[in-house]
Image (cartoon, rainbow over all chains, first blue to last red; front, side):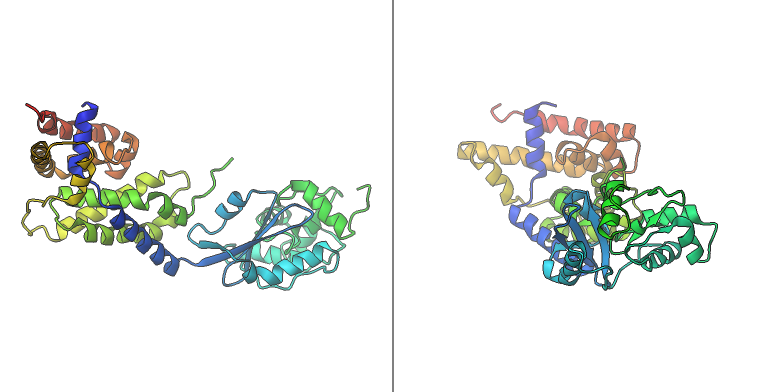
Length: 205
Length: 180
């Protein structure tokens, strides 16, 4: 079939007017805006680089750093609608800035951990109780949730922490004295920096 | 490295327009005169269904082909809904005049061209629905055979065969010259 025949085929099949296309597009967007849950997000400057924070209507659902903005957004609930809206995140943004300035050691914001399993939630709730300036081992966290043999599973659950820093999974280290792992952006360098900031590591660690 | 998940809102931005055009073309090829409104309703239905099923979709799926599959389903369902309605000749639509108006044709050449296109349209309307969809997907929407196979829920060989057979039936009317 030559180009001329294909052109005639396309002309016969026809094309809707641009007005009709954009009217339908707007209708789809309006429907989506009414249907999809809203996730609002913002960026906070930090010693770790740009820190992305996002909240659903339930509470803070994601903290990301060491990633691009695009990757951060594509990691959020894929069915949700996302919107850059700093005022909606003003409280947590201020608390994070105070934390990096050394003026705050814990966070007081509602969290949305609804995407996690009950086990992951219990691990993260335990990690939340570790005071700033101290570290626990994976085994200690396992014992704190009443599952002393679950150190490895604890490590995996901490690795899925959607709100690092706010839930301080960086305060959990290996029992041999090494730092263990860190799933936050920037890997172990970030973990080391956060622990230094909190005074849990001396300078030569 | 795992592929980053696609956001549903991105799917609307990327694919709404082509899905709408596809539905409009299918309805029109099936003899619906007022394609614009109906295509809009079906497009909304396609994205609603897609939204409900999105959570179960594999991350590495071809999202575009998947949307075409839902669209084809929805269009056929709508067409079957009032099957008893008699097929009518599709009235001429303004868009086609506009697309050709800039070619500097004389009025009688334009009239001849319109007549030729009307013949092509009748042949397209007479094709079995699967050939019709396959030809539109391949040569108007620009999908490859893997995507067409997914959209029409058949093998790639069958997708190719449907495009080929559809085109073979259209070849005669498409080949007729205007200035014979």
